[in-house]
Length: 266
Figure (cartoon, rainbow, N blue to C red):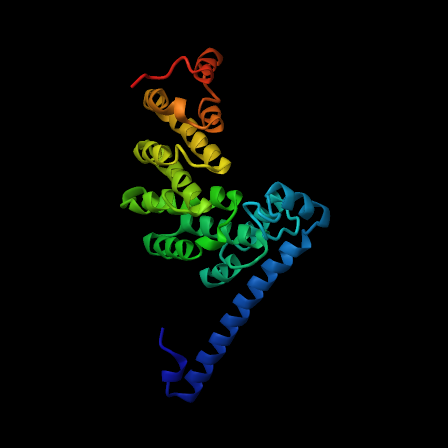
């Protein structure tokens, strides 16, 4: 687009300036409308409950995160209304200290990524990576990472996920394993099993749950591969990780894993 200041004709420059002003007013109004819509569903009692549920207290994993009490169905309705919000405004919304605003921003990105062409998907992926510090609770990670990072890397190099898996940052580690959900759905379990092995001795319960969950999903695609992985590594897994992984196994087999009678001696 030609900058308005480079247009010499007075009338054309006026029209260009007017169009720019209208576009700015429209996008400013949209982000303001989104924030207003989110605040209209705020609930003080729910915000307190959500703060406790998502561990926002001192020393907890989401210390300082701010909830205003919007429910997921309410927030998804807002996402549907503003589905075409410009990426520049979504970017601004994603930097909000309000958890519900970040949730809406991420779901807007998920929707626009799914509808976008390769150029749009690259822009959204780059925006997401740049804004990772704001994707900082498990619901934000789980609801966006497979659909953006995972989907983008389906046909690309996945080295980034191995960097994330070895990160000191809890959310990057969770992103590493959750991204592979997209690969599982495509029938590719290699990175799920490799990253699960990296995270076997992680100290955080949220990683234990995430790895176990992805192993459970992987087992639906290739039961033999996941059972082979469990035979090798099940005995050293944190108990929560193992329980999540074998949740859908037949009860007799599940008990054998829990009692440690089915693991390989290798």
